[in-house]
Image 1: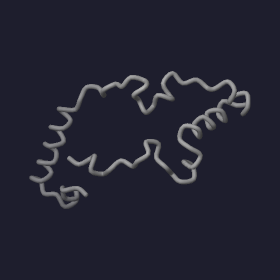
Image 2 (image 1 turned 135 degrees about the vertical axis):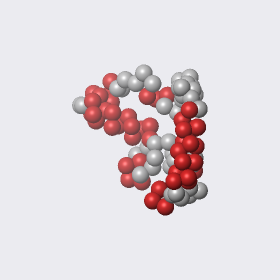
Image 3 (image 1 turned 90 degrees about the vertical axis):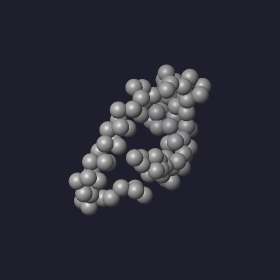
Image 4 (image 1 turned 180 degrees about the vertical axis):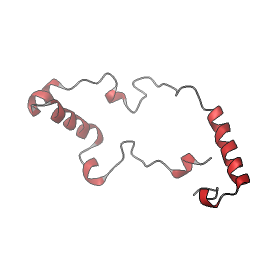
Length: 97
């Protein structure tokens, strides 16, 4: 839940404070994200990714081979359960200003 009022109900002074806060955050935003080495990355399976030749032969198409690979990485229930790739939803509190 935001501690700021809805935009429709904001006074001019409140909006000015909010915009100043956003400017401060943007001015201090990092130039780049930190990089992790391949083994540390949760996306290690996708770095320098190539299709598995055996899967490609088994499925007969690149799309099907990729689909099978994704099922192996994220699990067969992701399509049914709606599980998020990172295993969790992003909290609204991550976006608080």
